[in-house]
Length: 284
Image (tube, rainbow, N blue to C red; front, side, top):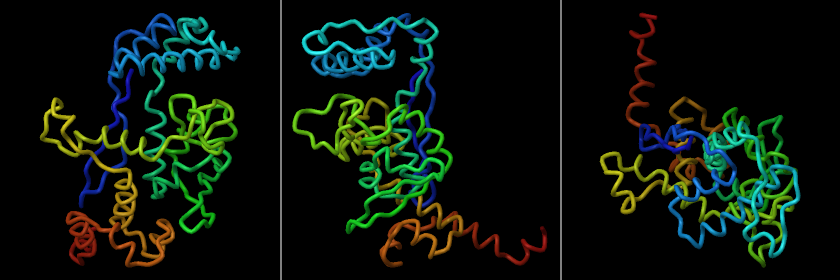
């Protein structure tokens, strides 16, 4: 199955927590090589890019099988290991958008800035406490907190990694990439803010423009990653979260800077007023 990320527009223009719509595909491929080719064929990327991805995915297959991958010139044209049919079916059912799903849930649940989350390393996480250590504006070390949605996805995203960037690209880091932005266990680079923004914007074009046709998707504009932070704080305000807690959660220095984010919508204000109606309380 494939994962089609979707979002919903809430009151006041705030984005509701992204979810994944499961789209059924045909029967699982019979081999890992067939799975790679089906994925590349359906990805719509250029042939030159597909060639690079094919080498990376083949190498990943050897790593998954706990066997040393071919190195040097032998990497080109190397065949991946043979997996049992049942294992291939399980691999094919993996959420191919796991990285995005985890990233978006963490951004929403923590109400953190996107650049802070993308700079997280595996060793910065405290999974048992559902929190992570980030470097905030000004260089101060602070903590962000998340909920069960992120906590359930993180182990799958991290797998057996113990250090290095949390969110990685799909390919090996190019020469000259700073050491801190390279995973020492996989050799892949840290996912950049620009690329993460592009992915989210592309996946939210249709939700942003509900009356548009899917054929017009190339001409549409989606949401920014910053919208998730705005939405989380708006929803907290709509749920009655106190101003001191909103300030602590968002780590804003003043209420004035928080005002741009925590803006409950018309429906939320109407619900709040109705809940305080003396006549409504007497009917309970």
